[in-house]
Image (cartoon, rainbow, N blue to C red; front, side, top):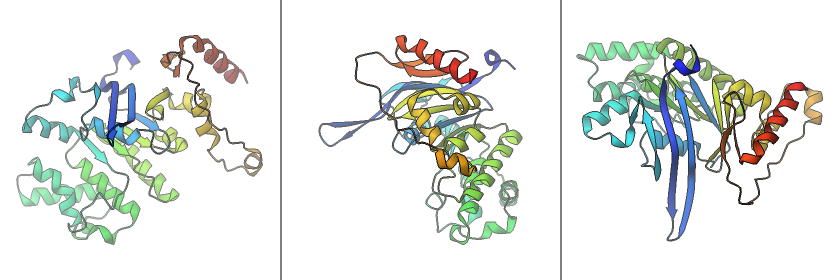
Length: 316
């Protein structure tokens, strides 16, 4: 299927999310970003803490009302969703997996009731037996045992709790899942298990993901395309292979230089690249295509510089 034939499930256009702090200060958590996600793909959003990644995800799911800009899901502007029934349909289609698997689970509820909460709200089971069967199926799907449904969250490890969170998100059969740093609180060995599970579920259920994280190597592993975010702005967008192998923006290069490799010789000589923000020189910088849908946050006169830089990288 060509790019032109693929359906854009999510479109974010010039999104701004600003917050007032005190009487005069304003925090520009998200400052005029635009991107889209095709149906069935994973779009990775990567950047350091405080860059606006999670705020973007929460704006998409309508936990925040955007300061300006628009967000379209399945062709419809989410700001125009009115009425309880329509909002309920949207909440069913768009789910979120949270960063802290323990804090996102009610410690007083049994696992089966946590998972079934969405089933109950949306009336997806006609009988208690049907509800229990669906919960057991979901537990099995995420690699847990059906008997785990009678336990409480504190009885599980971090990785198991995150699987419970994934099962809860899947319970309402969503089209789109926002994965808000779902592996950052887990051990490295467990991270790989959760990411592999998400990929398996994506293929099985035809899911679309926004995968938010600060680890570029892990984002590259799971994503089809990647957006690199810095202080509320997208500074580079492209395919995962292109960003990982030919990242051009100085901030992307800084993130790439921080990735360790299992090579002692390389690690002894590896040099971190410190990112120095663009000067306030009055140039109008925005995402510009330097070729093959590889976008850089730059001014018009900097496009040729980045194109030349890319050619040199590919020739080396």
